[in-house]
Image (cartoon, rainbow, N blue to C red; front, side, top):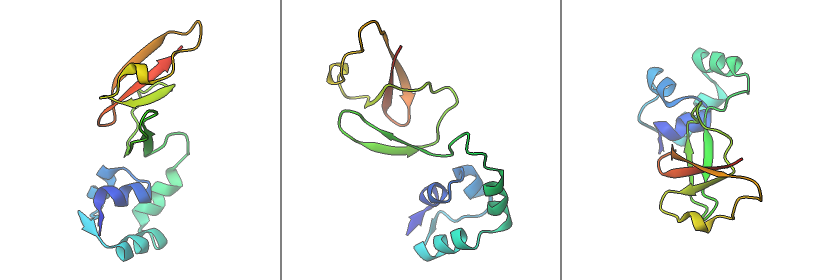
Length: 118
C-alpha cells in the first residue's frame, strides 16, 4: 500500500492537489501505476503547466548522518551550504572557508538546520 503523501511525491504533485482530486489516503501500487500511466485530465494539465523552475518536492539529506526526508521546498529557503539534523552539534560540520561567515536557518523540513556560508 502507498500513502497519499507517497503517491503525491511519486506523481510529483502537491499533497493538497492529491487530496483535492480524490486520491485516497491509501492506494495500491497498481492503482498508483494506473494513475501515472493513464493520468486523468487534471494530472495531464498539471504536468503540462510544469515549467521546471520550481521543484514540487525536494529531498533533504543531513550532511552529518545521512538521514533523508522528502518535503515541499519553501520560497524563503536560501541555497544551503550544508544541512544537518537539529540534534547534531555545529562542530560536526567543516569550518567555513576563510573569510566566510556562517548563518544557521532553523525550521527546514521537520527537523533540519540549514547552514549558509557567505
